[in-house]
Amino acid sequence: MEDKKKFSPNKDHKLMDQVRETLRYYHYAYRTEQTYCDWIKRFLNFYGMSQHPSTMGAAEVERYLSHLAEKEGVAASTQRQALNAIVFLYRDVLDVDLGAIAPVRSKRHRKPPTVLTQAEIMSVLGEMEGTHRLMAQLTYGCGLRLMECIRLRVQDVDFGQGRIFVRGGKGGKDRTVILPEAVRPALADHLERVLELHAKDLRAGFGEVYIPEALARKYPNACREPGWQYVFPSKKRSIDPRSRREMRHHVLESGFQKAVKEAVRKAGIVKRATVHTLRHSYATHLLENGTNIRMVQELMGHKDVKTTEIYTHVMEKDLNAVKSPLDLL
Image (tube, rainbow, N blue to C red; front, side):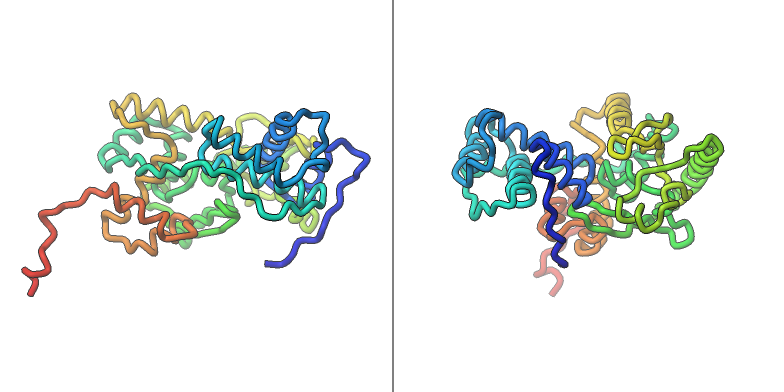
């Protein structure tokens, strides 16, 4: 991987402004910016905001991370998120190398994922309608994560090839998934309405959508092009928190989450099913239908096949269809 150019924030600015300035220089997602800033503030509050982080080091970082594990009982992934934010503060903002960090680690409790049967999936979808139903169909039919569905762009949908291109998934990875035949008509009608809304915005003097800063500099008009518009745009335009320009953002994830939760309740399903359960069910049903686990790994965007293997523990296994190797001799 190519080394990124070292950036030095304005030292005359307040510390948190320096953090935001650096995050934006390196094109971190706005959600990541919010998360990192929150963890950095919590770290500074732990020692008292009057104490500047430059006067502290690895020992203080280890103590705070250990506190998260021992006193607050956070999950291993949460502790790792806090570590990443604090390391960013020291390495990229303060230009300080903390060296090796060895806090008390949070225990990893890897539970089998909640999975719905195909009949239960049909029941849930049957209790949904409109845009939320379409989002649920794509999430289950393509194995999308919540924000991967929310952030889809018009140009990511290829009806010709029957593919959906997932850009910047977990770990910044891109992948390609199959566009289900069953969802094509509804999706085509939906995109037609999306483009009509975009045309209306353009006529009103708006029509911009957020695109990465590097692309915005290289292609100044790309933010107004139909292909860059979100597949699931918000009903109202809003002010972009970074550029302060009025744009049409994607829908909030909370509306989709509530719709799935309500559909699960109406379907009479007692499992604790969420939007992410649709993705878990996708992987499990692929394996049950005989799809090679390496292909499932690719479709899910998993870095390690061990992550995919967890779904083999929740597959419905028909022992009657299994023959002893002795009987095959």
